[in-house]
Image (cartoon, rainbow, N blue to C red; front, top):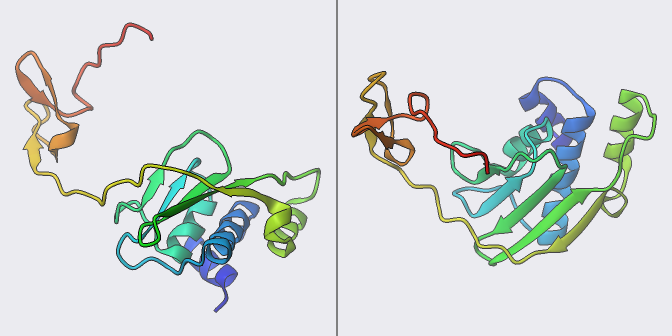
Length: 172
């Protein structure tokens, strides 16, 4: 099964967004010499939460659950891959946009174009995120549901989950 077929099987259908994910995985593997991740050696910081994320999960093994897929959703088709073993990081930004092509035409354009045609990419200096940590659970004193201790807030002397916590902001 090729990369496209594997990603489609995981995602559930084919679409241009998934094609972007497949191509950025190909780009990272080619330009950085990385292989699919086993245990957090490869990290992806994705600047969106679109369909391409499923390709990254299925092809490179970067997942939210493992802690090596970090979603920094700012709406950009940009992805930074970090290789812990080699201590290097490369950011890929999709420079190609759909210029009036039909959905299937654009998908095929993406799948058949070169990495250099589709992406701007460069090595970047970045603080490598620590490996995923396991936190103790704490029971919220309002809803009585458990949440990880790093997501507990104190309010009026009570330990509260983020859903029950009344956030205080002065607008800046």
